[in-house]
Length: 354
Image 1: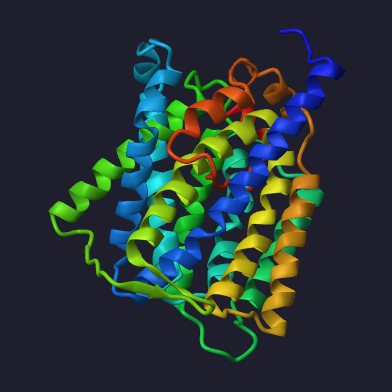
Image 2: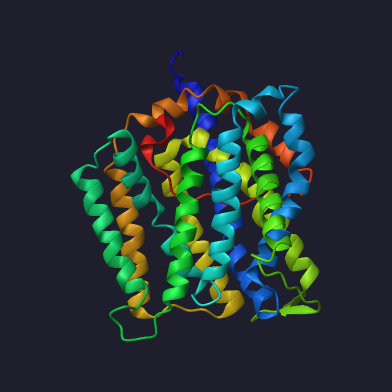
């Protein structure tokens, strides 16, 4: 395929940045809303099931339309769809909500943001892509920051259960990045998101039916620091704003920007989530945790700078990204709610070649 021209690069970059920022800002709201629901009597399983189920319904028709009658693509990508639904959707969301029960929202999210380190290890083991010295240094910096972030050396209480759930969410996020940046996947981003959400909904329903996943809900209001809101409104926001358009925007951004640039832009989610948790939940990090957060983010940045630079070209040449324009995604995905969208996280430069 012919290389992208300079004139074609700018619109692609602009649309990619737009999708990435919308996704990051929208997803940042999920932890605070989930925390409010759980304090009102909801279980993490119930919050995730409603969030995923609403998003699956919202994207079902747009996802089918995006296929343009090419139903065979679902069969060709069944492995990616199942993995996406199990790990990137159901697993990542459930474990993240479990983590915020005992960890601050920003702490749980930053642990999940260690996913680039896991991706680098996976690429090394699976594809023989050895990390550079700069990448290794970035991983080390992030690990030191994680120790400070979790207040291990500060003498404060440490929720090992919360850390464990956050690390499990990190695994789901790793799968999310790898599949999202795979430009060989024939599915349009909207269809991949819709199909993955449907798989996640079915799996969570089955787990709840056989008693593996505890489900409990409550009515009334959720009480946040500045105001209260009806439970039903919080649930709708979780399903539509922080899930439905979120996955579409995240995949679309990754295929336009490539793994590296998409990772940097996605870091804005951490800042947004921290500010939202501070405003809505009153969760203000201490000095040691702030230092740890800075080191984690700095480590991720250094890690990304140390990655080889050839992969973004693979993303730039991706036929799906060329075919799926910002107008198509906005038109298809905006039907559930034109004001919604959500988030991606960090991804590796090599992912495009997976």
